[in-house]
Image (cartoon, rainbow, N blue to C red):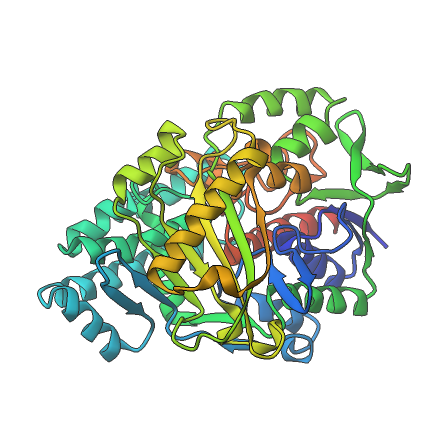
Amino acid sequence: MKTAIVIGAGFAGLALGLRLQSAGIATTIVEGRELPGGRAYMWQKEGFTFDAGPTVITDPDCLAQLWRLTGHDMAQDVTLLPVSPFYRLHWQDGTTFDYGNDDAALNREIAKLDPADIAGYQRFLAYSAEVYREGYEKLGHVAFLDFKSMLKAAPDLAQHQAWRSVYSIVSSFVKNEKLRQALSFHTLLVGGNPMTTSAIYALIHKLEKQGGVWFAKGGTHALVRGMVTHFERLGGTLILGDPVAKIETVGDRATGVVTRSGLHIEADAVASNADIMHSYADLLADHPRGQRQGAKLFRKRWSPSLFVVHFGIEGTWPGIPHHMILFGPRYKELLTDIFDHGVLSQDFSLYLHHPTVTDPDLAPPGHSTFYALAPVPHQGKLPVDWNEVGPILTGRILDEIERRLIPDIRSRIKVQFSYAPSDFTHDLNAHLGSAFSLEPLLTQSAWFRTHNRDDVINNLYFVGAGTHPGAGIPGVVGSARATAALMLEDLA
C-alpha cells in the first residue's frame, strides 16, 4: 500500500487526508499543536467555548463530498445550522443593512440605501454568477502547474475584467457608497484588500447566495472534530502535539519527515499544510530548493494579520445577529493604512461573531460568547510589541462595542482574552503573523501562487491558503481536491 504524510491538521490538511485515505493511500497527518484545526482552533474557559476562527461556512457541499467519497453522510458526524441574515452591516451613523439570500428582503434593504441601485445589484449578481462558474466551479479545484495552464484560463479572466478590483467592479454596478462597501468587504475574509483584489473574487457573493452561510453546532471546531472522526474511521493516523521539524529528502525526492520529538516517518509522498514560508525556509532548510523558494517567497506580498478579542458575557442578545460588520468612519483610507502603510489607525472596522445566538450551548445558561476581530497590518509592516499594544487596542474595541451595541459590556464580562499577530507567528509559524498567507492579488493567484506540487521535488505537495486557489474554507478544501488529484495520479 502506498503511503503519504500530511503536515498540519488544518481544514486543508484534513480534507487532503480524507481524500487520500478514501482512495486507499495509508495517510498520516502530523499536527504540532495539541488539538487539530490549525486556524480553526478552539478554547474552553469557564463554561464558554471560543472558536479561533474561521466562523463563516459556505459551500457546505464541498465538505459533504469528503464523506460521500466512501458512501458516508457528513450529518453522522457534523450538524450544520443555517445563519440568517448572513451578515448585518452597521455604520457609525446608525444605518444597518441585513444581507442574506431572501431576494425580496434584500431588495428592501437595498431600497433603504438607494432604490435606484436595485437594478444595478441584479446586474452585479449576474456578473458574480459568471465569475463563480469560471473562477470557482471550473478552476477552483484544478492545479496550475505551468504557465500554459494560466494562458488557457486567460481569455475567460480577461472577459470578466479580472485585472480590475472587486471594489471597482462593484462600483460599476451600484452608486451608493454603503452598498459598495456591503458588496466588496468579503475579500477581507480571505485576506484581500477590496481595492486591489482581483474582481474574480466577486464570486464570493454568488457562493454565499447559492449555498447559504452555515455554522457547525458546537462551534467551527466541531466540524474539525467530525473530519478527524471520519479520517480515523477510514483508518487514517493522526499524530498531535509533535510538530514536524524537517522534511527529509534524498536528492530531489522527499522521503519522509522528522518531528521535534525525534520521530522519523517515511512515506512515498509528503504534503504540507503548514505555512508555505515555514515549509520551504525551515522544513526544507537543508535542501537548495527550500533556500531558493524561501528567498523568492520573502519578496511576495503577504496578507495582513488580525487582532481578535474573545469575550464571554452575562446576558443573552437575540437582537445581535450571528455575524456583524461594524464599519468605521473610513473605508478605502483604512484599507490603505492596513495593507500599504502599515499603520495601526485610531479608527477601525470590526467583524463581530456572536455564535450563541445560533447555538446557545457555547456559553453557560443566560450568557453569551462573542469575538470582535479587527484587521491589522502584518508584523513586517507593523513590528510592534503586541504585549504592550494589545491591551490598548482591546480597550478601544470594547469601547466601540459598548457605544454601538452593548452599553454596559464591561460589567458583564466574565472571560476575556485576545489573539494578536505575534500569536499567529508563535502558534502557526505564520510568516510575518499573516492570517491568510499570500495576499490574493491577480499576480499572486493560480499559476503565480505556490504550486500544488513542487517543481523540483516532485513528490512534495502543498495544500492550504498559500497555494491555489487561496484562503477561506471553500478555497483550502478546493486546494485539497486539486492536490489530491495530483497525488493520486502520481502514486498510482
